[in-house]
Length: 174
Image (cartoon, rainbow, N blue to C red):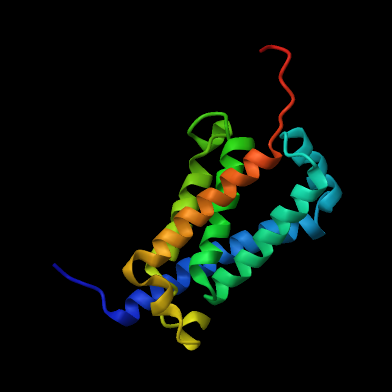
């Protein structure tokens, strides 16, 4: 069996962090600065049952911008991964409910992103990160800490957000 070197592992973690982080950051950027901006996002969130829509638009955008930036630079990586997971939990319940497959508005895409976040949180940011530069990377990830922080905090944050703010209007065909 062939194993990769530590430096190859660090490159892989860097690429995964940057791809996930930039993608998440751009979702938040889009909510604030493009399209319908916060007001449009708020209206969309209201239509999904996330009430009040404006507050939830700001919370989602702030989480996406902050967690995306933190993942990209590898700072507080398990908590940043938790932010990604929390966003995915809410999206899976509110917007991606059609079926499993994305082309039918399913939840496969947010599931993959959520597990990508969990994997990054569990493995840590690698050497090319601010966590490593500040000497906290090992402390955040040893003994499964990163996996637990990312998974538990992320799922609880998403579930808590849904419990507090997801109040869909019952459909007329129910």
